[in-house]
Length: 263
Ligand SMILES: [Fe+2]
Image (cartoon, rainbow, N blue to C red; front, top):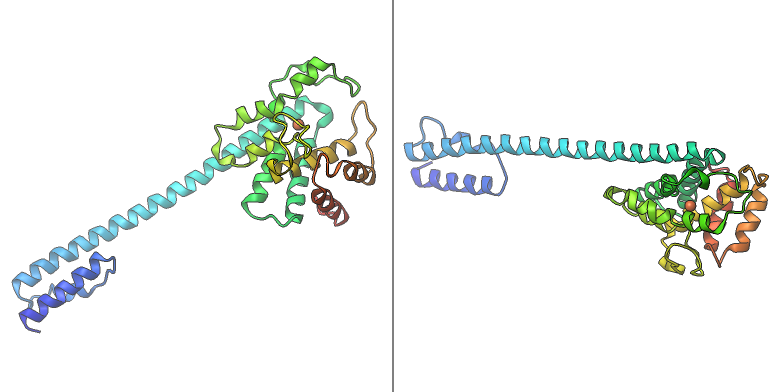
């Protein structure tokens, strides 16, 4: 190759490198028999390429580490808030197990409805955290009132979805799970609380948690209530489908129960 050809080759290699296509072709131009000018530039470019490659490798490693760290933080925080939910359940002895059953049942219903991936996880979280807002409540609210609460306590209890949102709001990776906590006592007909949302204004995840919550309350033993059978619970749920909850969710719950699809 004559000097002009070598220069042309050098320029070609440099523009390849500039576009991110690294190759060892540059090394050919650093041999002793290559004219000084081309060789000096080729050596400088080769050195630069090696440095850039090393920097890119380091950056990629850093990005991977950050991703890993972020995932760790996410998991730890979810574990921490779930522990909070369990601490709450421990105070409220007769709802022991309620939190995790609602979480698992919500997850199973959502899967039956065809939801997948992240959506399922958010719904499980919404189920686990739905009553987290009760955590600051005085003991009187947990005491046995034989199913009938004085109206001042009812008012207090009705604040728990909003308090839950306040507690969870800073944890932005809980994403839509926070909306499910917020809206798990809303009703299709707009007569729920805290916001009186109607129909499609209520997120599907919140309605799923709501159905799981009601189902579990009916089928659990409470001091003021004998536990009732799954069939009775389903009949009650079908009775309020269309006014409080969405029919297709109750149908999905029925299929889940028929498949015994819950842990
Ligand atoms: Fe609740």
